[in-house]
Length: 377
Length: 81
Ligand SMILES: Cc1cc2nc3c(=O)[nH]c(=O)nc-3n(C[C@H](O)[C@H](O)[C@H](O)COP(=O)(O)OP(=O)(O)OC[C@H]3O[C@@H](n4cnc5c(N)ncnc54)[C@H](O)[C@@H]3O)c2cc1C
Ligand code: FES
Image (cartoon, chains in turn orange, red):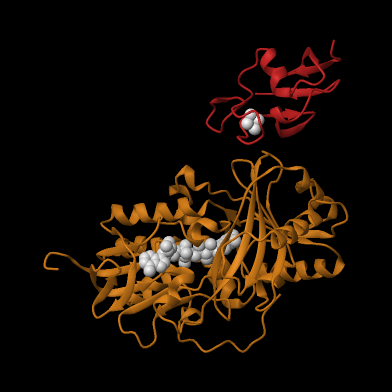
């Protein structure tokens, strides 16, 4: 096409990761296009929980989530009200003395990295969240964790990118081509560099990518203002998130600013249908009610599912795609892509523009060697 | 004569036929706005059969009960805002 522009960067996918990359690229002065076949932010981004959480499954995961959490804190004053950013903190629940020891170890690990964390004994925990069942041993409070509404956050990044000259192209990418991207309707988008940010669908462009869809269920209640104050997660969540083979559920409750309570979460491999599965939903709710029995009294409004893009080592792929010159990856964020989108954008742009990054990029490079050390927590 | 029961609507006592739905009780008491939407607009019963969720009120301290779905009981306390 004679008059169509040649973009410096064309990004496939306007989920929160693609939108964050677009904002960073446009801010760096690059001519940026984002291509989206559906609603921007309407993929896994709209299905996620929006918990901005430090996770310590591995040192690299810790570094990325904490760095990104600090970037969210920098964005916070600029986020519109609709993003519903709220620094409510996370309570990591310990059922018994064994889990309490895990919580203390977790607290020490956080503190050694300069992340605020404090221990609550049983009484302090009951005072902080009166709806928790009696008998829990205590909790670790990560006070800097936050929650937000992911599709609105994606739109915020997209709006920023567009305000700095980026362009949203509605269309379905069919394949990578020499010097650009071929769209399903026959159009071509010419670009110097291509960023693949298509979430769990990224394997459609590179079948060899080590990404598998991992299904999750969520349910949201009607509005009960004041019912829940913190994101409340059982320590066993780490085990659930870590397991690579088994279906699992964990108690993970989130207070929305509207007073609604978002109840999660489940993890399944091998599920391909997006349908809500009553059996899995029941298991998930039972687990939540084990911790907060009065949840049974609340009205639910909607349940849905989403697919996380899971990698074998649970770290995203951020950097040049092996064997594909001028193609970059920003995908594979599993259950942490809302948290880690800003850090992903910063690390990717640093690599693309040859500028220094704030944290080492090596653990997230697509051609990294599989980690040999055992996982934490 | 059907049995009569006394209920309270926002603290005000009302006498109703026992088989009347809470929604009917509220309407006969002249209450049309049963609740407020998130943006503050008044809302009231639409379908009368438990589907639209527009008629939610607080009953005996429990939020989001559908007024069209159950009958008045002696001593019931209904709150609508
Ligand atoms: C149940 C659940 C709970 C979660 N909770 C959290 C949480 O609490 N905290 C957290 O940090 N993360 C959470 N996540 C993970 C988070 O939602 C994801 O990591 C994140 O949304 C990934 O964003 P993305 O931009 O990579 O993918 P997506 O949002 O899926 O975006 C990819 C986009 O690419 C588009 N696309 C795909 N193919 C094409 C094509 N051929 N042409 C054009 N466009 C295309 C899609 O339409 C889509 O909009 C959760 C996920 C699930 C499922
Ligand atoms: S009037 Fe529709 S649910 Fe009650």
